[in-house]
Image (cartoon, rainbow, N blue to C red):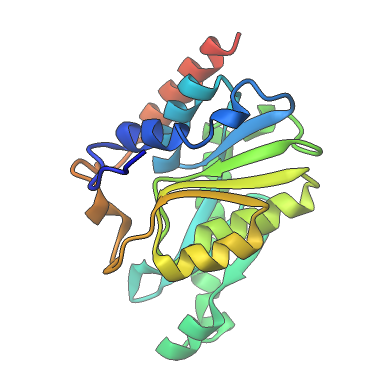
Length: 218
């Protein structure tokens, strides 16, 4: 299937992504984990096509103190922290410079765990996990999530992304058990450049998608 870029919406991207994951449709002991928030829209589209349980996974980007959108690392809900040492060196920052950012993002991470009722999620040990988001530029959040999931003793991690920076894709393929990435275009600056519509996703939208997906699985 030819990939159509830019994607119209996240739902469009997730629907296209699902075509490459059909071997997991109705698979036993398999779940979709979507990074909050944008990834949940992708996950909801996958859930409709694959008929698998959908759950949120909370990971927070650790941005440069002076430019928070520039990811230097990420922290995941289980406590795994990933820092890009080369990026840190390039901007002249040390771990201690990031401590206030880590504290702030940990507080937001805990808030989201409560909002999205993460404790209600089933035990992931022994599960095959399809880990998804709306795309990856530096891959920081995905690296943190993968490290976190390894600690939970999942059976297998399938990384599923609509779009990813080429260098990041090469690194992620080494970390996951399997990868499905629809596009790795050159000139990658930000995930949003590969979407026509790329609005911020609200807590309310995430909860509505999760509730709708849960009803469909009943």
